[in-house]
Image 1 (cartoon, rainbow, N blue to C red):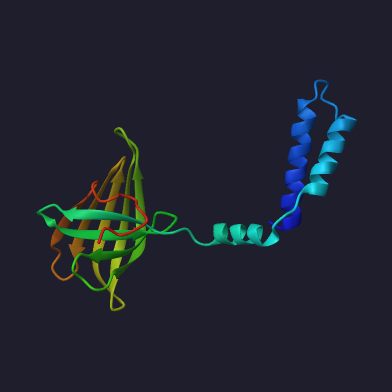
Image 2: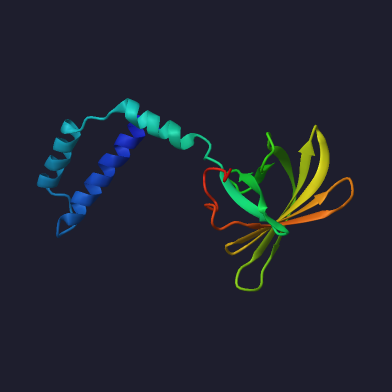
Length: 172
C-alpha cells in the first residue's frame, strides 16, 4: 500500500465519520471545513509508514512446540513451525544442529470434542530420508511419533504445556 493510498483511506474514513455524526446524514459545510483542516494540518511520517508496511510484509516469526519423550520426561525435542503451521525443523536436546523436515501429507478427521489433524514429515539428514514423523494435533494436545528409518522403532512424544507451547522461542 502506498503512502498516497493510506492517506486517501484515512481522509475518506474521517469524512464518513464526521458525516455520520450529522443528524440528517448529509455532509454539512462545517464537516467539510473540519476535513479540510485535518488535511491541511496532518503531517505524515512517510519513513515510519514505509517501515511499518515492510515489517508487516516480512515473513512471520516461527513458532515452536516443545515435547517430552513419553518413556523418559527428561528427554525433549522441539519442532519449529512456519506461519502456515508446517513443521520445518526438529531438534533433540543435546544435539548441536536441528534436522530439516519435509511435509509429505496431511489427514483431517472430524469427531470428538475437536477435529484431529495429522501431518506426516520425512526427516532429511545428509540429503536422505532418515525417518518419519507423525504429528497429531487435537485441541490443545500435540503428539509426535517418530519412526526411525533403519529399524522401524517408534518413539512417542507429548507436548510439554509447561514450556510455553506455541511460543516464538525454542524451549532449549
